[in-house]
Image 1 (spheres, rainbow, N blue to C red):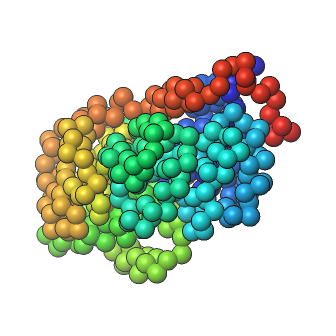
Image 2: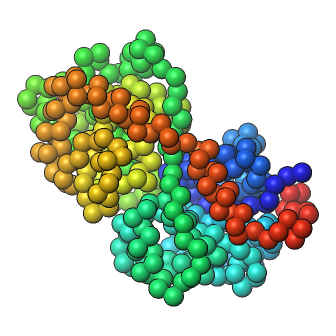
Image 3: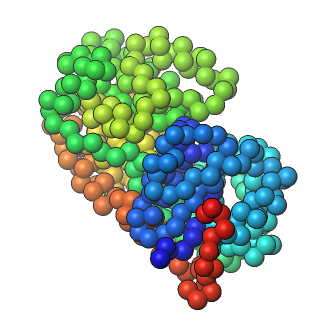
Amino acid sequence: MSGPRLLMICGDFPPALSGIGDYIDRLCGQLVRDGWDITLLTTAGESPEDSRRPFRVLRRMPDWGLRRRHELIELARGFDLVHMQYPSVKYGRGPGVNLIPLWLRLAGIPCVVTIHDFRVMRWRWRARVVPMLMSATALIHVDAGDAPFLRRWSPLRHAPLVHIPIASNTPVLPCDEDTRRLWRRELGAAEEEFLIAHFGILYPHKGLSELLDAVDSLRQEAHNARVMVVGDFDRDADYVAPLTDRIRASGAIWVRGADLEQVSRCLHAADAAALPFHSGASFNRSSMLACLQHGLPTVTTNGPATPPELKDVYDVLLVPVQDASALAGALRKLITDPQLRQELRHRAFRSTAPLSWQAVSRAHGDFYRTLLPTPTELPRENPQRA
């Protein structure tokens, strides 16, 4: 007998480039292993990988506009619970997506919404999300620091609000020293180069420009440092061309379109990671978690999104935001101090050891059960399975 039926909604999903999409892929897979019956609804498209996943993937939505209301409600009626992830590039900017929890509520269908990165967004973006905050059956936030902001923007709300942290989207491949040297050669990195990984979807606010400036200054000091960019753009925007030119002119290794196994090989090949986010590091930075789980000494930023306790949990080197000089100074320490690198490597492994998708899935499952009717009230058939 299959477990309760859950419809997961996410506009972005692999092979689309999306950190939230990768997160949902990992979460849904683990939920199935934990006994849940999962169907994912996402934007229309095709992927040969869908048949290999342990859950159903419906690439059915050509858009997420107001005219899709009845289609979405009828589909959701076949499930015991709907869980929506927000935001997503593929949802678009129309108002329809922000009304989905309200549509479902009026139809008597419970809907959980996970809100990502609420406090780092502009007030206009937060205002768009208010209908979701007020109408969802329950809210999940992946960043503990979002809670007071979510409460402030929905003061009349009394529905459950819970924090469930994320784990790294990138599985850690086994790697010995010979394998690591092989992967470095395949990337084109010289044995004596100090390779600095910058991982994630590319936006100006990820701080890549400051990192390239910092490494330029280190090279002028005769440090044999090189940036490895592991990531790509997820949209057409005015910053794409100039940032592309900058990466290519810098001599950086650029790994584009990498799957998660390729990402793991790249992170194993690196000597350190640099993630100079303009908003600062926080616990829900999956790229940072991936670097730490690969044992990389990591330099990142202390910004408005950085909780005071971050340094107590993850032993990263913190520098001010948008400060290439400070970033260069932290990287210089790593290049010139092998003992510091080794200490940070051990601490990275130790601090991320408790993170697992089993724990994340278990927390979701426990929360879902508080929202479900009793087993005798659950529908016996899912009309969408056919």
